[in-house]
Image (tube, rainbow, N blue to C red; front, side, top):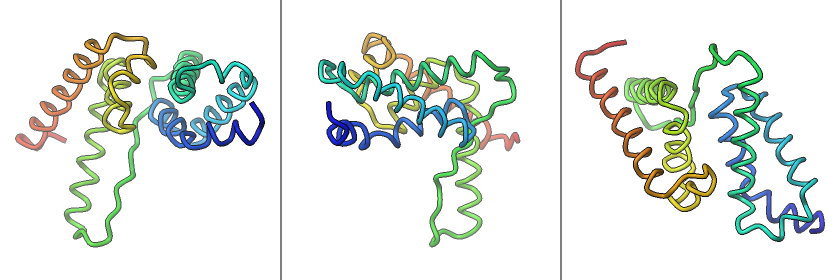
Length: 169
C-alpha cells in the first residue's frame, strides 16, 4: 500500500482511535501518544492491511489492546474519565451546568463499569459501531455484545435515576 493510499484508508477513522485511547487513558497527552504509536504500527503492517476485512476494526482493536497494556504497565488507580464534548451557546447557564453535571456523572458511572461493559458502551453509543464490528473488535459473540451493552446501559440508567432521585453527590 502506498503512502497516499494508506492515508486515505487510515485517516478517516484516526479521530475514533484517539477517542478510544482518550476514553481508556483519560490524559490527552497519553491518548495522543497512543494514537500516534498505533498509527506507526499500522504503517509498519502496511503490506498486510490489504488482506484485512476491516482495517478500521483492526486499528480499533490495536488501540484498545495498546491502551490496556499501557494501563496495566502503570498504576491505573488514579485515572478518571473526562468527557467534555458538550457546548451549546444558546442553552442557559443553568441548563448547561446541569448537562455538564449529567455528562460528568455518566463518565463517573462508566468508570465503575466492568472493563468489557465500558468498552462496549463506548464503541456502540459513543463511536456508533454496529454489533458485528464490536464483536470483531472485542473478540466477543454478537449476543454477548448485546448483553454487555444492555447491562451497561441499565447500570448507568439506575445510577443516574438514583442520583437524580436522591440528590446524592
